Image (cartoon, rainbow, N blue to C red; front, side, top):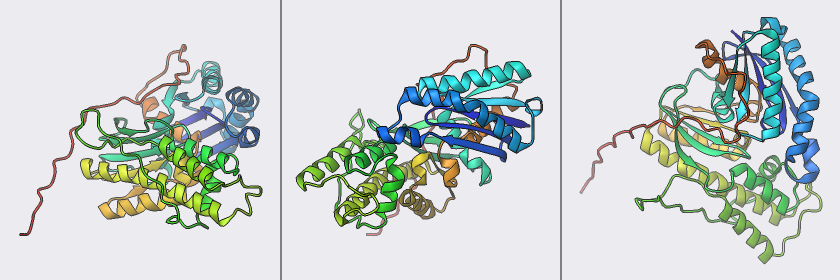
Length: 361
């Protein structure tokens, strides 16, 4: 089965042709970073306009590279949400037009579920239950997946997403947008123990203990306070930062990674997954990738960490997520529209029984 995937949730216009949910025939991505860089972040109106300008060419290129026509496509999967409403509508309306003209079934895909399926191209099917840490500029969530297409949200950010924190700290110290890649690069040159930033401690609402949820607003405030107290000026040349900036990048990045992995470790102890998945744009971060791999090694289970091209927004993952739905014969109604707050279904899952502890006197 050949699936045409279309992704336009934020600032990448992407199209892909994927065979049987795992074999990529083409994967075309047009990035808008150059457009938004001077504004220090994504400007929604500019993003939707650029999607309009590029989507036809991107889809045509994906079909051409795959060596297929619309007539040979078996179905279309398009991102329905979450994301920027204007950007989502461009992809959805284009996909509906193609589906109508070619007489093909179409399904809407949750963007976060797409990230879960980003592991489909380089790894065998995960063993379940699995834990999926999805970290990007717009999302920071931890899901327990007891079986395919079943999700239990076990942790989420209470405020900023991790990727957003990277962008804001980068802007604060003059490193520009996007912040993740440049901070990752400079952090390797700094001392992550020179500046130790505190991690947020979030209590459960019922007072039963600490929550698995994330919070990065306090970390941003701590960085801002450190910058002001030490009178650190924004970097004039990102290619020649001071040692203080290098240490700041290293300390900040280490704090984000510690927060993410701390919750992932607690969830692993609680739910005893058989596979750990890491996806989303921040999954490109070298320190996070290494820390998640080490955690998985500690638990003696595999870590599925896709190559960077699959962790950032792409249409191949949308096609892969749409494949089982189209295989079942699902088809979205013609009035399908963007849903900026679209959520994955949250199923009830019993926690794994705790192992008996043996103590020596």
